Length: 341
Ligand SMILES: [Zn+2]
Ligand SMILES: [Zn+2]
Image (cartoon, rainbow, N blue to C red; front, side, top):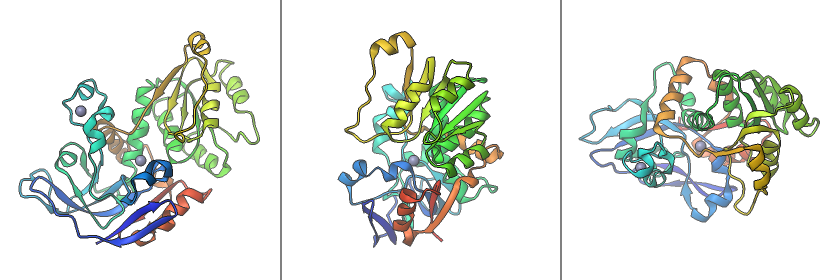
């Protein structure tokens, strides 16, 4: 079978690999669509582990099933979550599923940008979801990113009537925008340096959009919130500037949501005195558990979240290198997906 082997951001090669063998509690999935995530573009994170096959937002059809698998059949259309918690450890028992040691260790094999991948037993049992007929494979690739955003807003205890600032309007910034309105946000203010993304953010419910190259974000948020600042500032852009902006627009007692990783050598200066008196909360949210993927599927199915409109580019598996280039460089790309047709 063909796989897209990642050596570096600019060196992704189509290589041949044997179709994975499966165990009796596992299934083999024929990939149909797989999204490129912002984390697939973090070269500092991935290159030390290269060569490897990326892709963790896959949807496909079960092509083969192990003899002991009862809950799924050949031909089922499925979304598979690459990371699954053990549900038994200290972290899991406290609901911190994404901090579970097994969570990090589990993965689909060899990855999502392939013709076929193996779904290990744990992934099959805990977080493989049947895709309803009404949903396309493309839409199902958004289950994982939507789950990540749902979890982040839950960690920030979003409430009806909240004022939100979303810093960065890439795909996850826009998903946060739409979700904030679904959660009843009074006003959602979205900032990005690219006007094209701000146009899309408005289509997904942003009340106000700001391009900090032209306008003063802090000033606008101050005036839109009666001088208070935002209840929650979600930073979805992987830059220190974005974090500084996020901190500067939080109200007293507000929450700064850390949703994107910056480069490993980057640090943010924070004054404990400032934090102490402002009672600003810093809340990080990594990945999504099996709880939010189910909620994400329901939301997408309900039609409340039109994820399809987020997909701006589609490439064939053999064009994965081009797909990565587009995701990295195009100013008019949001969600780029790879199709195996
Ligand atoms: Zn992702
Ligand atoms: Zn666990």
